[in-house]
Image 1 (cartoon, rainbow, N blue to C red):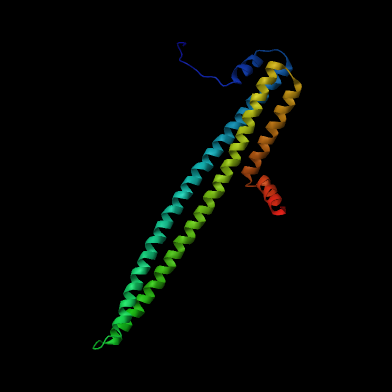
Image 2 (cartoon, rainbow, N blue to C red):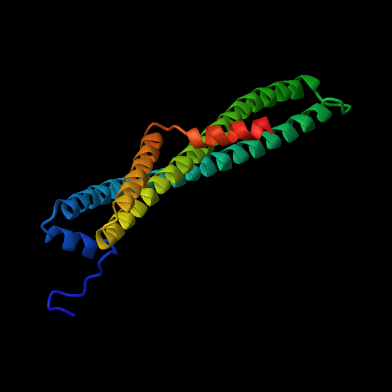
Amino acid sequence: MSEHGFHVHGPHDHAVEHAAHGGDSFSNNIAVMTAILATVGAAFGYLGGATQNDAAMFKNNAAIDKTEAANAWNYYQAKSNKQNLAEMAMTLPGVDPAKYKADVARYQGEKEEIKKKAEKFEASSADWNHRSDGMMHQHHQWALATTAEQIAISLAAITLLTRKRWLMLGAYAVAAVGVALGVFAWLHLDPIGALLGGAAAAH
């Protein structure tokens, strides 16, 4: 352990350090590419975490509204029971039907207001759930994009060790796929899901 503390380096860090001290353009190009990929991957990782947090928050809002809807429906049922009792009381001998008729009308009006409130909370809960599902899907896209950039960085590190140019081309290709996935996530596009959905529909 050094006097400055213990440091853990990623698998590509030593390769980048080696390239930085190298004098050939091949190593320098790989080092620059690795630094750029690390930056892009970090941005993708941050966005993926942010969308995951939003998905959790939206799911929590959905649960809150679902509970409010359940409470409203319970209140609605209580008013229905009172209305039924008032309607039964109207048929009893020796009572004033007009009094209970007014109660029935009042309970009916209150029930309509409660019903609207319950339906509003149910619709809001469904909307929050839909938004949460959308955010989780976007989170998975960011995760795929981040993973692609990490693979590209690993390929770049291997390229520095083996000096195989075809590995460098592979790193570029994987990095391009990661960037494309990141663009799709940013634009809320899902071409992979669309292709899979189309294939499933064809069968």
